[in-house]
Length: 329
Image (cartoon, rainbow, N blue to C red; front, side):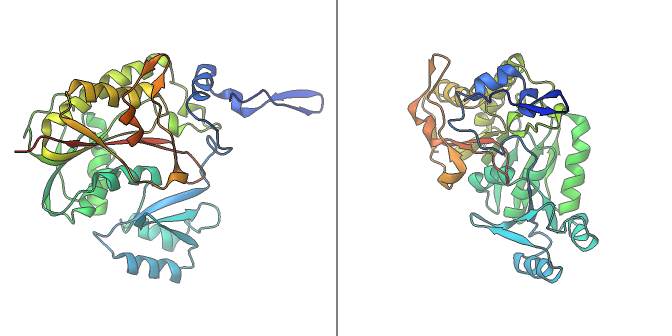
């Protein structure tokens, strides 16, 4: 449903609800994507997620340190190395806690950002590619799960963002081979990676914050179409780099079906059955149904095996699809 105009009266003046700051075209599209809109969907997140960096500290040691510092944190059922802290009451801005972050023992990473790497399931001694790597959150998480054993290649086409990527890898102690080339044109080591992550550039609708106009200032349907075209190229080239039997994960932080289900549907048809969409096991309370049709276009029913993450006070909106290369040597 669209959010109605809400008028507040104060000293004879009218004020418009802050929800009306969002682009009207975006609002119209969203009502057909989200069956029910959570009240907190575009509000600042109340909780901050941190990843315990097991390259530098064990989970047990981290929990003990936090308890000793009287940090009020919550564990995450589906991710043992993640914790959730209330931004206002969690003491995350005091020196002892900040020291853990500044030393790379804890790393601030959105809960929704952690999930694609969990789905990717990288293992030590594998060959893994992060095709769109900056700022490095997922790259360093992959290195952590690999225990810095194996080959991890981090590619970031935008040179200005390479500095951030290198900084995060250095902070967390993550080891990766770095390259800077358009992910659609990367040709090194075709067919050799056991895992490939495509955390694609997108229209970022899942990150809109009502009181931060900059977060949605550049949104447009035209941008969505441009992103969709780029995402298809990235996903197709990623498939060429994947070894037979390997796993390919595609993720975005947007609601737009053109960047999610449509890209997946196009990829499945383009690869002529060589890739199968695998079901993603995520707590149902965190997800809402993927779309099997949008604006008169129908998608492959197996699209239901992908996952749309429901925005709430803990995390932003996200989309994740997991493919398996069905061709074996």
